[in-house]
Image (spheres, rainbow, N blue to C red):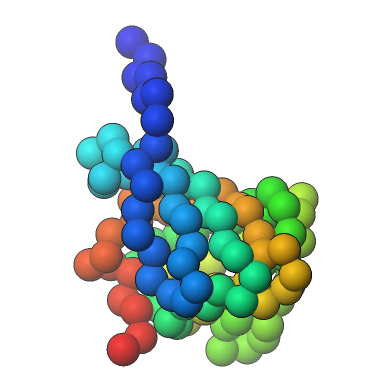
Length: 120
């Protein structure tokens, strides 16, 4: 039988200023550990600590521009574009551009504070 979820869970995000996370599937909203699907709304000027996650992260930008920094480069991922970050890669997300960004993140396995390995 299909599993219907009426509303996402709103999760507090690290970084400054505050980013809104709406988790549809994942540990918090659905108790799912296999994957997580969340919509992010990041204001202009938002940045978070770098991280070396132990999961694949697939990101589809819906609106605006998301900056993704790796050890090798800095990429601007714009509306209609997507990026994949592999487990064990150091990355940092930010939205320094006017209007910020809205995007969907899919993590395999599901996002977990224990497996994101944020910089201190």
